[in-house]
Length: 442
Image (cartoon, rainbow, N blue to C red; front, side):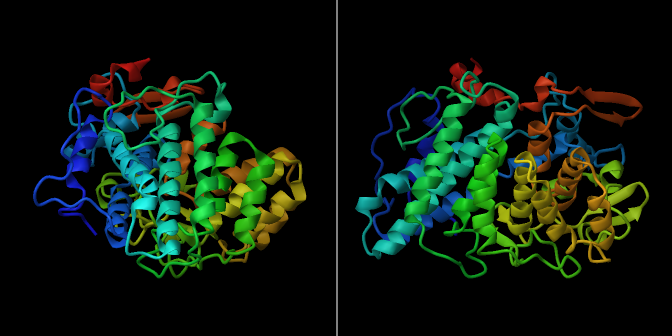
């Protein structure tokens, strides 16, 4: 649902949120409606859902999943080539930009809904509380994604001393925002998930409405956040709580697990690989080679037209809408268990997924995994994570938090390198945001 006349004055005022230059007055002009009823607030929060940025998909162009070459359209190369080759200093003027302002648009709406809990009318208590819980989850997810795009990885720095992104925890559009530390951002994300958990009361949404956060989503997002923090015990426990309720894996021969109607889907919110992105690249050949011939995902996820022309299937429409799902929970648990030195349990989480993904029921993987050293097991868990969650917005974030390896690519005979630990593993805050708020550069 798009808003035509609900809350438009306040949304327009969001442009001022990073400047603090002007007052924002007269928010109820003639012909405009400030939401007061529960249905009006549901429309408002639906607007926030539809505005969630697809920047995790755009970041995939920087990862090892994507191939660009001279056969791509001139327009697509103009938009994505400099992102793909990590040219952040002198990008083409047509280069796609990360949607910083759009994140804060969503945050503004989420904050307004949270602040308006006691003002909503014509709705049941459970309905109103559910919406507030969803707003807390949106606020947590937006801050988490912003931090993983525009701040160093939590496990690769001193979070208490590292500046990240500004926290936006109210709907005031006049204050000038400054960057919080990474530790503060993650603490706020976890606090918002805790608050959301107290409010969320819908266990399952009907298909078509399952982009909304439900009760299980709180632990599912916790699982991811704790994993990124290296809090292995907490990550595994959150994953286990999710898997105790929802653990069915999709049949990938019948459909991709990131489809909105998949049995795996916990929250079907983000369309990470939009049609615009999906049409603009080929799948990197080395990435594709990670899939064995017995891997069912090889055909489910990709269309190999020729040996050098591999196209993505699991993206390009809103059918592929997914934020949290069962496959990720198993992989989060496997990685966390390994770091707890619970190697047998880590292998079992991994094999639970692999049995559903290989044509032999994972028999060959059972043998391989049994023969692995502990270090090889971790490598297999991380490789399986790359295969399973490919093009769902995880790969760039995973590369950042697991050693930031050296990446190399070639375009028209010229080689481009992202060195191990390269500062470009952190995407710069967009220049237009710094222009209106120079303090963001500090």
